[in-house]
Amino acid sequence: MRTLAAATLAGLLFGAVPAIAHHSFAAEYDANKPIKLTGTVSKIEWTNPHCYFYIDVKNADGKVDTWALELGNPNALLRNGWTPNSVKIGDEVTVEGTRAKDGTNLGNARTMILASTGRRLFAGSSQTTNP
Amino acid sequence: MIKQRGAAIVGVFVLALSAHVFGQWITYPTPNVPRLPDGQPNLKAPAPRQADGKPDFIGFWQPDRQRECTPDLASRVRLAQPCEPGKTVMVQNGPASVPGGLPLQPWAAELAKKRAAELSKDDPHPRCQPDNYPRVYWLPHFTKMFFVPGELLMLNEWNAEFRQVYTDGRSFPEFMHPIYSGYSIGKWDGDTFVVTTKGFRDDQWLDTPGNPITDAATTTERITRPNFGTLNIQVTVDDPKAYTKPFTIDMNMKIMIDTQMIEEFCLENERDSARLSAPTGGK
Picture 1 (cartoon, rainbow over the protein chains, first blue to last red):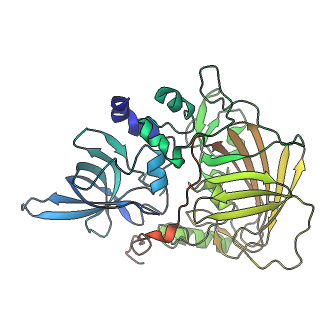
Picture 2 (cartoon, rainbow over the protein chains, first blue to last red):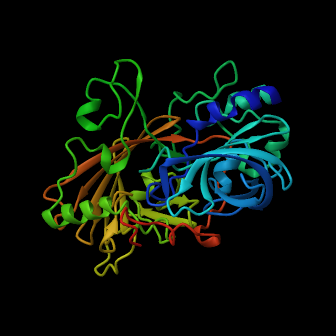
Picture 3 (cartoon, rainbow over the protein chains, first blue to last red):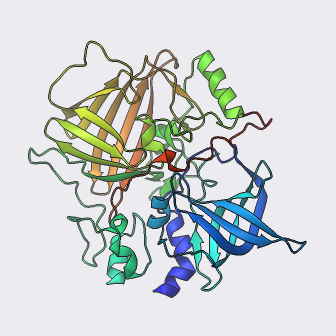
């Protein structure tokens, strides 16, 4: 069962409960700036209207940048298969998403892959449902 | 056990998870769901009925953009992809689904154009302002409905919003101080529940692109439950201040099974509004 969850969770659930289109995506994020970040989770805000995961990412200079990643709201994540323990502080994750228009280290996450298990979690991005 | 429970959620949302998750109320099993012989929910089963024989709308509902491709669908709903008879098709959402577009008055068209050009940065919804029914129907925040004596109640997770549709025979009040979702009266027309609403606040957003709804609006909703898993809602908006003629939004809602309402207060940690900007960078 866990294998099934790891392999297909995002695909199964993506069309089932709609991503939370809380706001106009294009007013905050730049669809032409895709990001793929790998780092360590340093802080989690399990809050409405969006959850935020902060990850520390080593940059090209060897220094650490902290990125804030916006996900769906807690209800959306829970209904899409998350539990509060799905990703914990200290976990290594790879996040795919879109960078904020303002160029800060803020991104809208589409998927989050947990390095320890390879589990791919749908992140509740609003990109697919809102202009 | 897990396989059986997962099947119970098919068609609504599928949770391929460990049993641990089902200890949460948000994934608590829904009682009285009709089942197929294999245990899966029978979403095509007849709609439940109230004690007086009228359809019961009890359930937790989310917008459903997948429609059966019937010959007349395109005349009622704008499609998002080619329609193949006998299959389902994705349709547009909310006011964007009105065939031919919305009949906006010139000033309203200008306003909607400006809001679209600004990428809806001033939308009250992400600023945690209250929404209105009917807009709530096509937002991805979910509504629980149930009849109680004298009214149909709608509860929405988002900001704990509620709506009362009175069925006790009352008339509209003489003075209706404007409110977000107006004042609603419901009557049965056969198996169709007809809701008339007046008394909206002025200058609200009808959708994310920014089409308006004003205090001159009267909406008429014709709600049916064709089967256990589906509500069909046809919302006619008659708002002569903003539109040159009435128009009708025809949409489906699908039931959510094995979950329940959990509060979802926008102001808890709202950060988007300060970052929303138009293409020019204007806030």
